[in-house]
Every structure is written in C-alpha cells, then in structure tokens.
Length: 103
Image (cartoon, rainbow, N blue to C red; front, side, top):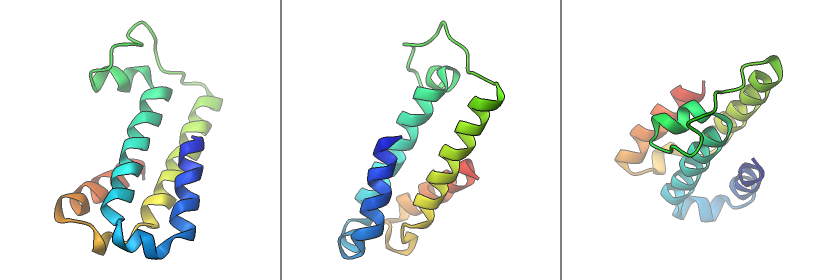
C-alpha cells in the first residue's frame, strides 16, 4: 500500500511529466492494483495463477472488508487522477474496466 501512496504523490506533483507518461503511470497503477489485490486476497491470487497461497482463504471479517474498501477508494482516486484522454486506446479500455472494478 505504501507504493500506492508514492504513486498518488507522483500523480499530484508531476502533472507535466504525467502528460508525457500517462500510459506508464496507468501501467504502474494497474500493476500495483494487481499486486495489492493478490496480497490481500489469496483466492484472487489463485484466480490469477499465483498458487503461493493456495492453502489460505480470504479474511472476511469487518476489519478486512474495511481495509479493502479503503484500498479500493484510494485506487479509484488514483484512477480519476489520470487523464484518460491521453491514454492509448488499449489503456483507455483497461482504465475504464479497472475503474468499474474498484467502484
């Protein structure tokens, strides 16, 4: 999750660099999302083909759900901070799908 904080800071303070590297910023964000999701959900990890946590189940208590909601809200904000008009066509589609996923 600390990677997300760094990415949010990058998005906030480097608008000019972001304009030139919007696709890279989105790719980084999408990679971080997958990494975070795999780390908090062994079931999702297995769905993606990562079998390192096959013997584990997701935590489904109130604290785990609250942590997931916070994480998804942070990703939503980060996605909304990316100028999707500057993304390549494939990343525009992926950004919309990812935004739908986190919402």
